[in-house]
Length: 110
Image 1: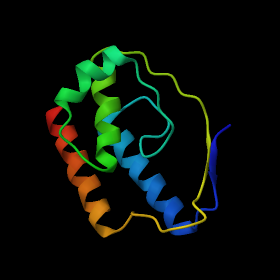
Image 2: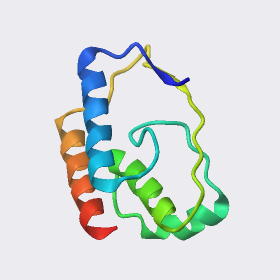
Image 3: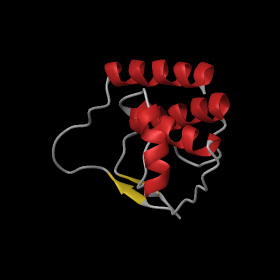
């Protein structure tokens, strides 16, 4: 079973909120859109990447949504994400706004 280790309450709430919104608006049929270890078939990437418009966290959502709509099979393997020991997260107000803009874009354009 996957999960996170070392996150503070703010980070957990942010991640759960982001995933809730993504599931509500996009119905991606995967457990976590905001962070995971992913492998893609070359054919899938060749078909999907030219269509991607989002950046940041929304980029991850867009790849999954486009893959699902194109009929590619998506499998998940649980991982345990351990928070970094050095450096700081890039997650701040700017990234949250970009995520929300990306979510709105995907809702209306995919």
